[in-house]
Image 1 (cartoon, rainbow, N blue to C red):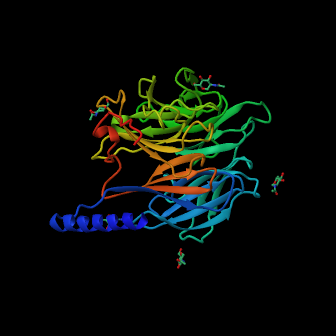
Image 2: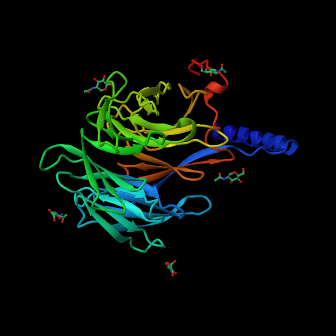
Image 3: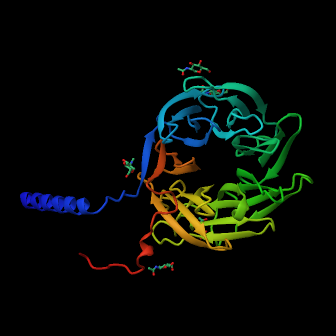
Amino acid sequence: MLHHICKLFVVALALGATVSAQNSATSLVSRRITEYLLPAATETHEFARVPNSNFVLLSQMSDSELIKIELDPKTEEPVAFHSFPMGKNSSSQLHGVWPSTVYPGMMWLSLQADNQLLLVDPGKNLTTPPTILQTIDIPAPGNGPHCVFEIGNRVWAGLKVASKQTGGYYVFSVDITDSSDQKLYECLASPVFIKEDPTTRLIYVTQDTDSSIMRIDTTTGETTQLPIPPSVGNNAVGMISADGPLSGVWFTLAGNKTGGTGTFGHIGSDGKMEFFSLKHPMLGANAGLLHIADASTVAGGPALWLLSTSLLSDNSPDALIRVTFDAGITSVSGEEYISMPTQNAKVHRVLPLDSTVLVSELHTFTLAQLSYNNTVAGQWLPAESVSNATYTQPG
Ligand SMILES: *[C@@H]1O[C@H](CO)[C@@H](O)[C@H](O)[C@H]1NC(C)=O
Ligand SMILES: *[C@@H]1O[C@H](CO)[C@@H](O)[C@H](O)[C@H]1NC(C)=O
Ligand SMILES: *[C@@H]1O[C@H](CO)[C@@H](O)[C@H](O)[C@H]1NC(C)=O
Ligand SMILES: *[C@@H]1O[C@H](CO)[C@@H](O)[C@H](O)[C@H]1NC(C)=O
Ligand SMILES: *[C@@H]1O[C@H](CO)[C@@H](O)[C@H](O)[C@H]1NC(C)=O
């Protein structure tokens, strides 16, 4: 039997050779995800590229280690890493990682348990330890800086841990050049992402467990809560600020223990929340959307990367999804689904590089990289491009 199959295979190969000898060969379009194993730790969290360098900095919160990862300058493939302990000790909970624009090449970090923000020089080469340039202590009653961002001339952090003094939660902001100019805005549980609407300059903050978005008018200091309607989903986490046709802030809903709803939202200059939903019955309907990134290209138009995670529910897949929109950005028009090779990896963040896309896997201490060959993101053909009919025969 095996011999027979082998013989058939040889015949097929011979035919194939004949065919390709007659026609000019066509390069195969491919996409792949490669997983890169990092030091074993229970929580692989945030990561960001050091601008104009081949380094990515990634935080492992459970042991407070900063992993410096070197990328191949041509292919963007991770090639080597070195890790550095950050904070007082291994319980300092290194979490946030964000590039500074005010200080080009420098990076902001947060130490959640030490209640501090750091500005560091990551160092010229892989083994150079990061140098701490500035330490900012979070003032009471603030507690537990999680994600850190630089917006204009200020550094912002969501204080994820309940205050020791008041039991409340706060968003912190400080002027980069005048560290005496500090502000705490009281918010709901718990602040995660902080972004600015490019048109109105209003600040928006996702709050995960209380499932609401806070708007901050920094000129008046006034704050407003925009609760997520439970009918569309819950747990607002990931948020980005986008320009051009996508102008405004975009945020994702991560769902709860029973799963996600495949829903994400937008707030434009009119301040109104609009919601969008994924359609795919297998990977989209239960998607717990934790994070988001801009996937727009000049050739392909406006698009977003969405990251569905199993972090909150086993019913949600670990998947990377690229969505495109109709001309008016009123509904989703195209969805490319890329199932992550390791399910239950509890994927955490998505970061597009120049030609590839990185995804961190919180539970499996892995950095995954999506790359395309002989095509670009946005060109992968879904089954629906040839037929909406399903072949239902068993054989
Ligand atoms: C990409 O495609 C080119 C041309 O078809 C091929 O030579 C190359 O091996 C491919 N690379 C990978 C990583 O698949
Ligand atoms: C780290 O330091 C804190 C406070 O200084 C202490 O409570 C904690 O036990 C230390 N953790 C380790 C692992 O040494
Ligand atoms: C590391 O960087 C320094 C300059 O900052 C350079 O002199 C040195 O050769 C580099 N070392 C390696 C191993 O590349
Ligand atoms: C989980 O979310 C779904 C969808 O929004 C909702 O119907 C359900 O009540 C929520 N469950 C809990 C325990 O909050
Ligand atoms: C299948 O359905 C989609 C969405 O309704 C539509 O855009 C597409 O053109 C259809 N494909 C075919 C081959 O009919």
